[in-house]
Amino acid sequence: MNTVQLIATAVVLGLVQLASGQVVSTGTCQDYPVHVNFDVPRYLGLWYEIRRYEQAFQIGGECVTAEYSLNADGSVRVFNSMRPRDSATGTRQSDTGRAVVAFPDESPLEAKLNVTFDATAVDVTANYWVLGTDYDNFAVVWGCFGVGTTLRAESAWVLSRTPQLSAASEAQVQQFVDQFLDESNLRPTIQDAQFCCTNDPEVTAYPQCS
Image (cartoon, rainbow, N blue to C red; front, side):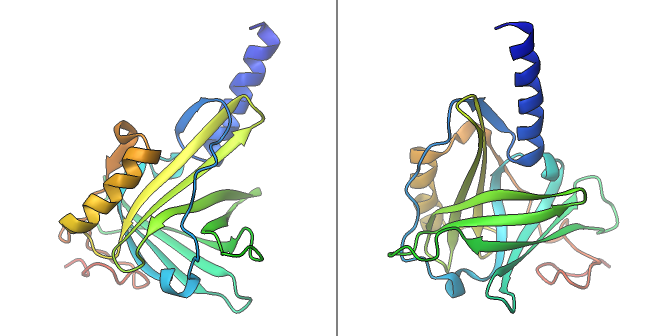
């Protein structure tokens, strides 16, 4: 690889890490099968993050939740919140975004969404593919950002309707992890009620800090 190619690769790698996940590798994004007959209303509501591929925008974040609700225009409001690990006051960091089904006219409807967050200077859009969910207990989410045939950066989240997954749900989740994700890159998220207390009135998933 010559000097120009090395510089170009370094620039692309930086963009990928800023725009998407932290699990970066060579090659193109895979075309994984996703959940079909996707029921958006059933997917709305509160989800707790159980595990994830570490993200640039989530480094050091614990007590992570995602809340989905409908906007007036039919899109989905995304409200993500986390507590920095070194926070001693219950102060949280939150981001609000907007999600739309990527292919709304497909039948059966596939659980492929595009999520957009305002990153100050430019909107950052990411793929949000639900590989599997039963709506009531768990969801396994994956996304991939690619640059040509050179690099890809993958994101992944294991979500739960409760702060911990039941053994039965964990077994279902593990099937998706084994088939599609890299176990070694999944890091657990702290969801301890005492540690995760909050002083943010918009976050109702945890008790208020005393």
